[in-house]
Length: 130
Image 1 (spheres, rainbow, N blue to C red):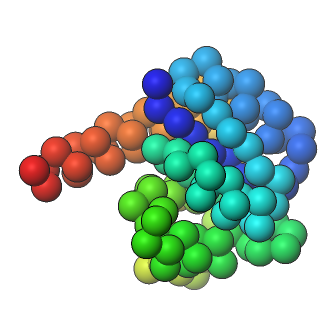
Image 2 (image 1 turned 180 degrees about the vertical axis):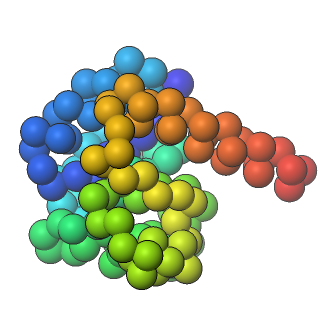
């Protein structure tokens, strides 16, 4: 079973997404950027879902720290946010994000489908390197 780390500061969303994701994945959550970074190092997920606007460390700062850390830089990160500006999307892409999901564009069920697609993409990339 794939392991997902969800880093989301809004408690209601975090609980709602976790409940849906647990239907298909082993899920760990974090409520802010600092906790998310620590849990990425501990939990070693197969994929991280990362909000951008959060206390302590914002999602872009967390993404940059993940990609600079040899022990966890291999973990794919998908931004999960309502920040839909072109500049934010470009900054995340340049920092190493695998993808970008706008929360308001879908439902928890749609999110589950999107994550499955990202995991297939990650697996395909890993096999292509062999």
